[in-house]
Length: 283
Image 1: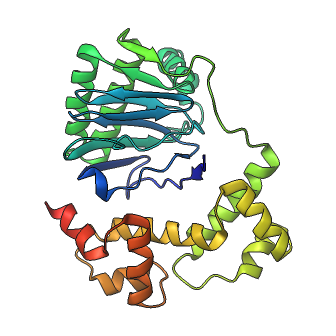
Image 2 (image 1 turned 90 degrees about the vertical axis):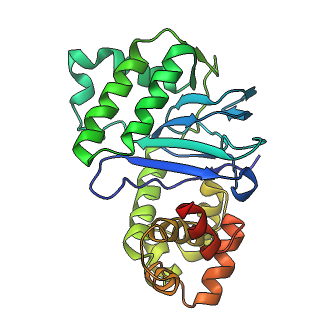
């Protein structure tokens, strides 16, 4: 199965990311993917397929899962029935600073993070309580969100209402050399996606010749650099479409040369045009 790497960026003015989706399942793409961030996924009602690591099962009446870094998973709207609503929280292990988890008060949360590398599914009263608090997150200021997220992690760390999805665990192993090289490439993308990208320039960032870079990137990311750039730009466009900027402005701000190409690439990635995507955000 093709496993795609997903770039995760914190929300503006925040140290982590919150995504709130309310869409029909057929409007979403549910690729098997991975990223180095931890992820809380809450599905509000309904049924669908849960695929985390090597674990595949059905959920009913919603779902609540905590997924560790580099643990491959697919979108939880796969095979869902009816409108799909979810809140996703994505955070780095050190989002609150390098030493925070080493404090003795953080021992239960540190243990929760360790369990998450196998994928943790929560149920019972814990699922109900956490889902209410995740909805509350959407209404809070950045500082209040941070405090509420710590409370959520505290509750998840102390409950017994959970089961591990992968007893053996599974993650994509990336050695330190590759991780450093990928980080340089991703930093380049983040800083240059708004303008035309020179493949020679990005190859030099990776300290590789262009042919070697293209082969390396495809091997590591399971897609070409061009496809990756388009995916990254589309993700940036999705954020801007939630603002009052015109679709043409969004197109050029995200590095697309013309509006026709932007529409074509966006639809290929999101299965809908930018204008339709914007309308779903407003519903």
